[in-house]
Length: 319
Image (cartoon, rainbow, N blue to C red):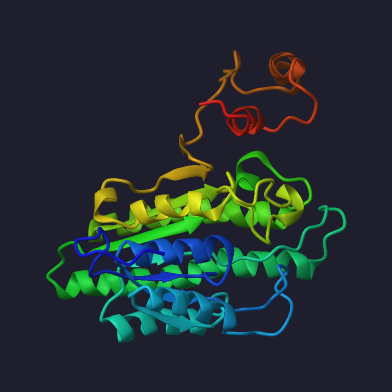
């Protein structure tokens, strides 16, 4: 990474990036540091993408060392964000080390893929715990910190940015990932609720659906075809959007969902009504609904989800 320059957009700000030891989180932490932020690099450090293995501070330490070697400021937190108390300590560490917290980027996650009819309770709970509860835990303590700062300053706005991580698995479905898709959908709901709650304090909350080649997606995307060139699915394509959303320039961007990968950013609309039917009686009957809805769906491909056509169009490069 290049040395942060004086006058960089995040100069004087401090950030937390969870899951920052590898993949997307690593690229995001390096980008925030390059833009001038001091960074708490959080990673639980377990080697398995399913959350298995020994806890290690090694991955987070490597990223923090890279930031410091380039002249930036970084500290390590090797805690588990799905644990309420450890998330509290993570936010406290940022304030203690850097004097304040300005930016929270939630990225930590694991996978326990299985079809819904084969998934165990533990596989469901583990993924929801790390992704959705992990996002909530850090957001809970960061938002309380910003609210207290605003009140201490007489009720005026403070600087706060939250960038959460969802997935296209939420948008279009993912047959072998019911736990992951549900968690990522929950993160979108958490983000929009948080955006509404914190807007009056000057804090924004947005969510991204990134596509990148990491250890989490190695069985989906495989290895890069051209090792010498920048991979179109490299995490470095995602990190600049996170840097922008964390910056003062994005003050008017709040409660938004953005898909990002390989040189493309798409702003996703909130759901719109596609069709509307009114009863000609006091209340619908089965026969009336059958006469209205069955013909409406008759020409659709069997098994198509409500959003699949639009999202699949985006996947193939449609605007």
